Every structure is written in structure tokens, then in C-alpha cells.
Length: 233
Image 1 (cartoon, rainbow, N blue to C red):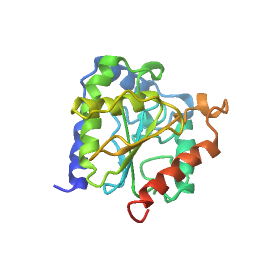
Image 2 (cartoon, one colour):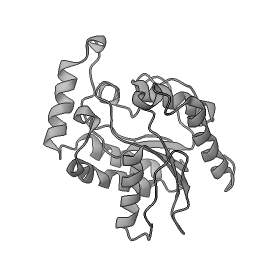
Image 3 (cartoon, rainbow, N blue to C red):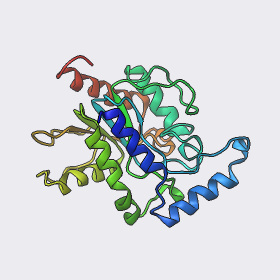
């Protein structure tokens, strides 16, 4: 099977998942009640699949869907403040054809990038439990496997960083303890994708200045440079 076929199969499995009762109840409750600003929306209210270029060499790993963002729109990082910070940066770096992401039919296309997450359901207070993270990690593991041209990964936030490395260690990769820091770069070993860490583009980080547009641009420009070292980016 091709990467595109494998990813489509994975995303079908993600959408029907009901493994975590707390998350099922929460995502569906939010979808039914809705936020006043989105009363006219039919909320997605299901686990959110990955999105992007099936031939991507770069995998972006986030934390989880926002209650009124991806849980509403059905596409990762679409419809909330985090996406409003992420997609313009990807556009500036040449990884996206437009700087906006509002819904699944808005024409957004990604080039050489695929976006996924540690957890696929919107968690209360944006805090999945350790058990919920563990239940969802097999989806991320398959995402890594199904990108057949994968060269590198960008982890948005410490949770994404820690649990992406956790998957590789569980496979037997001899990866030592690595420190999370914005801009930290690691070669993980022979046959493994490299890892670049970034603060998450949450409003908590962007509105306080902890993560600026310039800092974020450096992540994507560095990613492009690393990909260019192995071929045209």
C-alpha cells in the first residue's frame, strides 16, 4: 500500500475510536452545546485525524484538538488561536499554500509536511490523562511508520516531545534522556528521523511573548534547511 492509502486507513480508524470514555463524553458534550460564536456550526465532535502531504518528509506533532478548534472543524490546528499562529508560519516557510485555516474545505494544502497529535480527542482543560495518552499513542506510532519518506519531526511542546521519543524508545531505539527546549535539535540515531523541539503555539505562549513569530519562523526555516541537506526542499 502507498503512504496515502495507509494514512487514509489510519484516519478511518482514528475517527471511529471510542477507547477513552471521559474524552468521548467531553468531545460530544462540547459538540452538542457549542460556543455561542459557533451556534451555526455542525461540530465535528469526533477524534481528529492527521492532515497533510502523504509524501511528507517532515512530521509535526501537537498535543490534542482544541474544544472549539479542531473538535469543531475536524482538522488539526484549524479554527483556533494555535492554528492562527501555526499556518501563517508554515506559509512563510513555503510548507503551506495559504496562511489561513478555517475549515476542511478552505483549500489549504500542505507541501512536504504532515500534521498529527499525541491525542486525537479534545480533553477537558487541554489536559489528557497519562492513561488517555497511552491509549492514543499507537495512532501516532502508525503515523510515523506510514510516512515512508520521513526525515524529521517537529514536536510542538514538551508533551509531544516526550511521547514521540517514548514511541521510538519502546521500539528499542537507544535514545538517551533529552532535554526539551525551544529550538533544541537532536540526531536520534541511524535510521531514525531527527527531532526539533518548539514551544507550542498556544495562546498562553504567543500572547505572553514566550513564543514570538520570529522564534517560530526560526523553527520552520531550520526544518527547511535540514530537509534541503538531503535534497530539494
